[in-house]
Image 1 (cartoon, helix red, strand yellow):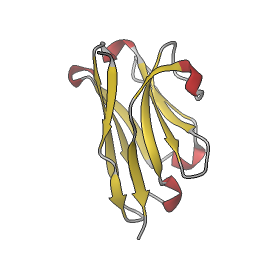
Image 2: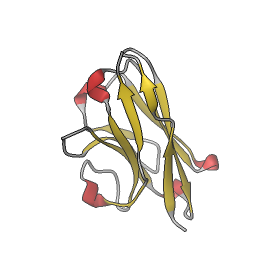
Image 3: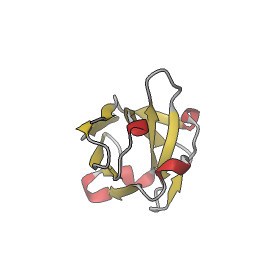
Length: 123
């Protein structure tokens, strides 16, 4: 069964950090780019950043540059999203997804999605 499972979300204070994990099963992660998306309450889903199958990362949201880092461990079939200096505006449900033809900010370019993990940044 091809699937992605996110974990690591939770409640954190402003300025804090979280590391999200995206575990893949049923396919070889090394062959695909993986993107992270988020959807905040009452807002549309947006692409945040993506890591290509060769390990290059692309940011789609300027506000996370310098704070969020994406990485992958192909041996563990897992992609990580390290989020530092979190802000209340980062509050959202975070999803990882498989890029079937290379990284993109558009969700239509992804064919497998996780169930999402909620992140709440609040004091």
